[in-house]
Image (cartoon, rainbow, N blue to C red; front, side, top):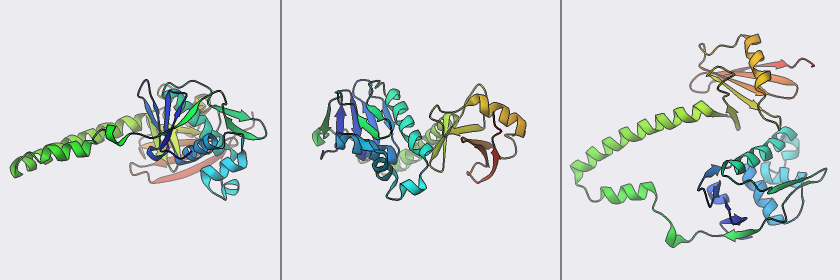
Length: 247
């Protein structure tokens, strides 16, 4: 398909150039990571079962089979399915074919989608530029100072909101579990089931982790080990790894 995007099930827009999926009905949007975008586009264009090896190469490059772990591969599709639900799309779009790969559900209609240039809404930058042309130099300076202050406050507010829920470290998203863990602790799990709070909570107490010395603590939950990253506000981190005890 040669288009700017795809209309899925007459309900969901997949726009690779914008790195996003959007709900036609609810207008909700989710930003996708590059591997998920490339894998989803390959699945849509193939119209058949795509082998795992092909998805590895599409998502992470030619040498992906050597460098990318199965956990990273599976987590990519776990996150993609979660993001589909977050935009209120609940149909079974992705079907796993055991021991082969993955395919798009044949029952779901997918057609090329190209946004109409005439209907494009002006961006915030374009609207501000048009408004500033109508004011004189003095008002321009005053307006610029006001806008700078507002933007700074909004940036601090948005940054604070995003850090409350999720922080990206490297290319992995770490989530904060509000009820069970301290405010500064974020967890990332390679398990398809997601973060295991019951595993993280006693581990924090056993290692006597504290928020005060560094500001933020990240826990990477692996199958055989736990890795701790203690970071300052500039994400300068040092790490410790512990082997999980057999159950």
